[in-house]
Length: 66
Image 1 (cartoon, rainbow, N blue to C red):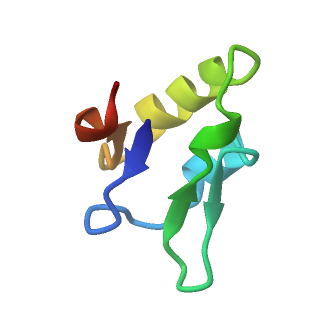
Image 2: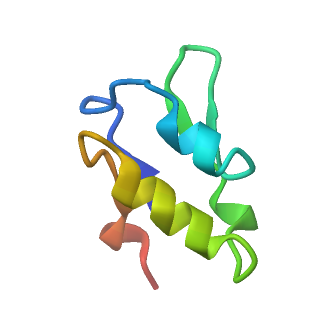
């Protein structure tokens, strides 16, 4: 599962621009991740968003990995 560290996040919207189906802003202006729709069809965009984050706020939440 992917997560965003909203303490580090600049809220620049880079991830939402690259992969808007997975990354979006919530009502408080924080980035939320829709892990339920990550699949082979969009995983490349998710990885691009992760690597494009200027503060490396996007990553795998290893605590929730099965």
